[in-house]
Amino acid sequence: MARSRIRSSRPAASRLAVVALAAGALALAVAGCSSSGSPTSTPLSSTSTTSSSPGPTSRPTGTSTSAPVDGQCATSSLTGSIQPGGGGAAGSSEVTLVLTNGGTVECSLQGWPGVSFVGDGNGTQLGAPADFDRSSPHDTVTLKPGGTAQAALKIVQALNYSQSDCNPKQADGFRVYPPGSTESLFVKDADVTACQSSSVSLLTVKALVPGA
Image 1 (cartoon, rainbow, N blue to C red):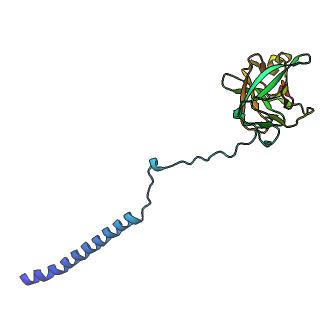
Image 2 (cartoon, helix red, strand yellow; image 1 turned 135 degrees about the vertical axis):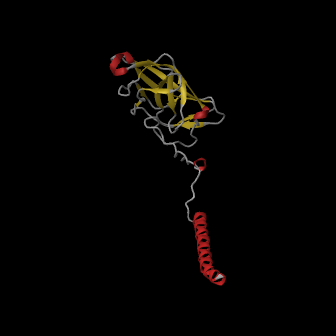
């Protein structure tokens, strides 16, 4: 009877061994899937953002009228001022915008400067830029060191317009783009009033001519 019990236990032991082997194989398969088949997540902190650099600066609309000329004056070498002009018609005045070559070499300008009122103490443009008086001659002007070029600037009085149409505001002066340049300079003049409405044009500028 003892032999019979021993023989009957062998098949059960074999089955247990087969089950153990199958479980081991399954565990290995699961481990293999988790190491190579599962997607890898990227930590949020490793995500990078790419900022594109701005393209070339285009010439501002209505602020300069010609391509740079040979020997173009760099804006950084110029200073600007407002001088008395030749009067003006009823309801307007005329002043002279003067650009001075503060550099050490001769340079040139040609065409109409871009002019607009600025204010708020930070260069904010007020209203529309100046119209160009295209009836004026616009030959190339050569400025020796210390030399000047000038342009007549007509300013229509803001009080010619209603409060609602103009929305007047005291200006700090003018932003001036030399012809052919995309860089500007500030010309102080605290005695001018701008219309903040862009539908009202108060400024008209002639082309640069040699300074007096």
